[in-house]
Image (cartoon, rainbow, N blue to C red):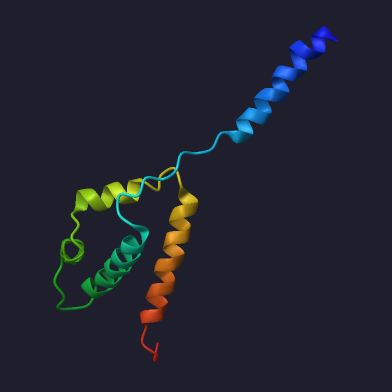
Length: 106
């Protein structure tokens, strides 16, 4: 019975404790609600930049409009590195926002 306590019990405890360990919460540098609007605006700006006679460099303009700079925006996006499911959820909301802004003729 002593071998049971020394061999199996520590292994079982290790498995149980490992199940309790979670990925740390994502630190929000910019609120998700703001990121949703910024990302939607960036996608729209990118689409507009592909049209003839449109100015290049709209990204900086969009970020500045929302009171952000590239470094802060990048830091906010980097916060999703360990939380891809959060990024997926965020982008689903961005897509919903973009679809809602489409004109009825499209």
